[in-house]
Length: 99
Image (cartoon, rainbow, N blue to C red; front, side, top):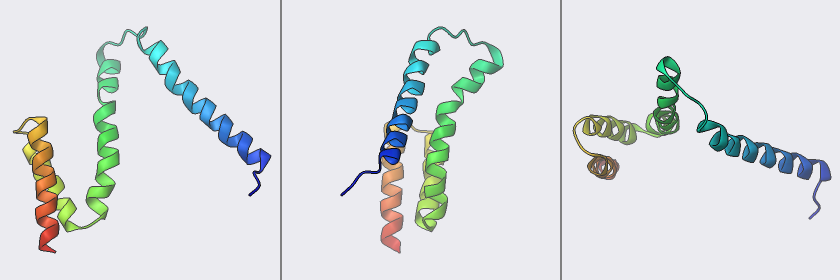
């Protein structure tokens, strides 16, 4: 197996840039004084990323996953996190067993 030097350089460069952007966030994040809309925008990032990761799976895999996602969303409005996770897992298992 041979390694293309240009591909290796590209992979290493992408890894270095990715690492630097993540590490820079730790150093700069503590120095930012966010207020108002900027703070609200930064606070909205984690749930937005979570929805972006979960929504395609919940909506593109089949009806059991979609229904389980809706059940889990309803449970999340009333239950603590651990109970919500349990409801989500159990609903997916139960609905998949019906198909």
